[in-house]
Each structure stands twice: as C-alpha cells, then as structure tokens.
Image (tube, rainbow, N blue to C red):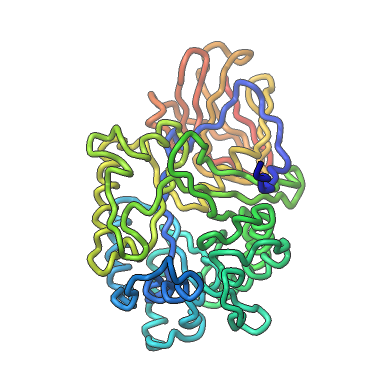
Length: 444
C-alpha cells in the first residue's frame, strides 16, 4: 500500500451555531481565471522546453525554436481590456527570472531596459486592479542558489523547480526560496498576497509549502491572508472549495492562516507547449448543460479556471484567447448574475472569514467574532428562537457601537452589502460588509 503524503493541518476552528450558514458572497458562485507561465515579454514555452529536454530528452522532442520567443505587451493590453469589459478577474504570474533569461528587476537580455520597464508598468498599472500578481517561483526551470543568485551546477530533476527540489526540504528552506522570489517582485513595485507553484513544486512537501507561504508572504509583504495555488482537480466529486490551513490566534491581536486555492479545469484553452489547441465544450457546452464548469457551479463551489499564458497566445494565433472569450460568453449567457468574478486574494479572504468567524445565537440576533474582515459577507439564518416574522434586520459593529439597518429586498439575487431578504419559512439571508472583531446581526 502506498503511503499517503502528509497533508497541511486546518488549525483552529471557531464555534459556529447550528442554523447559521455562511453562503457565497451575495449568493453568487465565485469565478476566477488562473494564468500560469506568464511574465514580462518572455514566452516561457520557447525558453523552458530546451531546459526541460536537457533532463528529459524523451519527453520534449519538439522544435521549440519555432515557438514565438515573445508574448508582446500589445497582446497583454488586448487581453486585459477585453477581460475588464466583461468583468473577468483572476491571477497573473510574473516569473522573476524566466527560464534564467534575466531578472525582471534588472535586465532581460534580448530586450531593452525601456521595453522591460514598459512591460512592468503595463502589468503594474493596468492589470493589477483586476489581477493578483504571483511569483511562479524564480525561474520555472533550474533552481537558483539564493546565496549566489545563480543556478546550481547539477542538471537533474533534483535541481529543477518543476520536479524534485522540494522533496525533503524544510519549511524554512522553502520559505527562503519563496521570499527570494517575492522580494524581486517587490523591487519592481508589485504587492503579492500569494504564490503559484510551477509543475510539481511542493507536491511532495505540502505541509512545508503551506507553512512557507504563510511565513514568506507575511514577512515580505505583511500579507494578512496569504494564499497559494498548487492543486487542480478536473473531474469527480472531490471538492474544489478553498482550504483554510494553519489557522491560529483567532481571538488574539495577530490571527493567522493560509488559504489553498484549487483549480477545477485543465489546460483546455490551448496547450502550453503550442502542440494542441483546446475546446470550449470541455469547460461548458453551448447548451450550458455539459462540461466541467456546470458540475462545479451546481455544487456552489468556486470555479477557478486554469490556463497557461503561452496557450492563450497559442503560437501568436490567439486560439486560446478566442476559446476563453467563448467560454465567458457561455457562462454569462447561462448563469447571468448568478456568478461573480473575483481575484484569488478576494476568494481567499472570503473563505478565511467564512471558515474562521465565530457565530453564536443570542436573544434577538447572532453574535459574530471575525478575525478577518470580508466584504459582501452573506449568511442564512434560521429564525427559530428569534422573532417569528422578521420585520427588520440591522448590523451592529461591536467595536464602535454603530448600528446600521439593512434594507429589505425581494430575492437572494438582489442581495448586495447592506441588504436582507426572506429565504424560506422562518429563514432570512443577510449580506453585509463583515468588520474585523465583534459585531452582531440583530433580527427584530
């Protein structure tokens, strides 16, 4: 029997009263697009494949030199403008030293300093309102010796980020590597609350990876709720809901946790290596009934679509981009306002609050204690032992003794922060911006 790998620990969990459920924000299913293998200018597929082939010659035989060496900023802007017009949000990687071509906080040989600075400005000023920025380790290929800033001399899977380097590594060793990556992005003006793992990075050291993410993101960026993207489950009933891990100090002055965000689709827009194009129907069929996304949405779990930037650009032909556009059109046509696009950091914050907020019944309401604030916090409350027919609902911020009445709406689809509605016999749903610390939902 194969020995099961150690898993990250959930940590502390608060009391949450029976009959009180936290729902999705505004009763909408979160969506997000996870973009991997992206960085400034460099097409990682062009530069990574020969380095992968050095270790695995039988697996990487294609003529990589025919792939575009650059994914131009004009395409980054085109993609970003379309996404903004359609409300799409997500995560965009910036690999700090892509395939050892050069450092984004110094130079990229093959491009001018002006071109690099312009690319950084585009991502920093134009994309970041809608996209979280993650380092995807340092190179996505060879492991860098953080003492020298150079790759290790050994050319084997043991010293490739995508394969075996994390095997047997301690939390401190992995945290040092993550922090090195994060500091490079800080040098060029990015703020990061999370990290993305390339390939198999961390797969054999999941507890250490989770704890290293928590330590490094807090250390370098003072991130309140660090998160990481490591897992993808593309079929079956395995939950893809975010996992809140290593929670501690929930009622103290320094609450902590790290959130694992889980993708639910594969590389179906276009292959990262430019060898196979994708298919809309794998995500959602034209009638809205088939494909992976309806399965996940039906479970009310966040649907985190996964892609690789070279596959979206797809050899300069933009095949993956067109597939993505059609997938978004189908989602919006079939689900309308039942979905909400969010950045990974926003989903992580909501799930941390959802999982770690203490909820106790009291006469006339629900007492809340939240270690983390969260906008659009939405709860469903069974009103047994409360007024038989709720006539008004208000939120009292316990820290400032400020009571705000919530406006009644007709249906859950109309919920926004500061509203409530009846959701069934002796049940109400309320949506509000959850403050950190003590508050009270009062039902009269």
